[in-house]
Length: 376
Length: 77
Image (tube, rainbow over all chains, first blue to last red; front, top):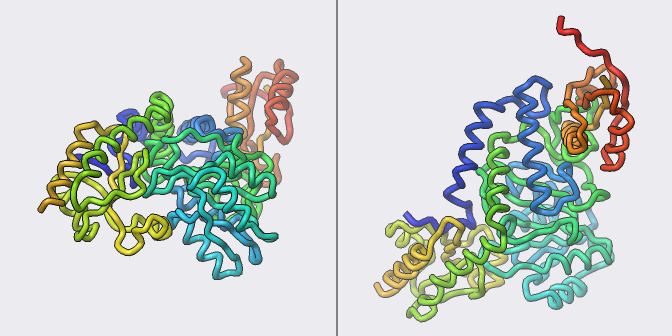
């Protein structure tokens, strides 16, 4: 089987990740921050190690600026709904995934307005889009760093500088970029960066990051409340980061695995990982550009190859590839706005996404299989 | 021994790590809720001989603590 769906979740996980999950369950099986006995303390140490690793990789000011969530979607909901108030105006990336679009749409029903902005056409164009769309009541800019069906990264450092000048909150969806692109949350002026643990960071599913890039930044009222392990006689969540945003028991074994996933990324380096993925993508794309009936979209360097075969619905192409042992994802990828921006909003497309575990042979096998399906 | 109450488990871990990096051994411990008036809490316990240095280190790293006081060592009974 050839796995080319790394944009959905990376697989296989590094052996060190799998071992860390098992070891955590066997040796650190207490509830972190709930009690002070040895197993609870070992679990708390596992969480702290993950916070330190994530803060260091993604440029948070400190480990306490990393809160754990179930996934990036939870983190984005907490960030977006924690910032916007009725009467506010938001600027939403036109390449947004539903993880950011749907929270904004939900807020729109509660008196928050928004506009879509194109942030993936280069620095000058992105800043011009922002300046043109900014209003007196604009509160936040919500950016998809790298869309899940495109390879074009938003110029975060420039957008961050714009937001600082205008006093806007910058929320970043790093679902596709964390672990694949260098990120400096504090240095780039990112207020909140949201990332899953299970994609480029190579961790298990069930864990995500809500990372604060600035000391002085704070969200408004929490949207999740519950046990935090501290200040339990008070009615509200504690003020201190990160516990304020961590209601309930965290997925400690998954986070122990995530720590090893982050170490794995650091050992390889994001630049080397991205170069590897780009090379594989090009190995597959080159022959397909000459293949009749095959249409490539957003055909730039990156880990994602988006395509269609003329006359075939994308799910049928995905199924034909699955029958040949190749795992890709077809359809709309939970990103109807991005598909519309790329011109595939009518019927979606097929997405092959490469990862560190893939080889040039995998890329050639994809090209051969797509060519064979297109000839049929 | 000395104990400093911390606003959260994460801050307690961060304090322990900061002190360890400067050669001061500290342990994260649960704090008697009666001391905090807010319920469950954590703190760090370390040798009072290094108290002044520990305070400098924590202050230098921007790590806040609640109260810092001496505690009696358990006698193992």
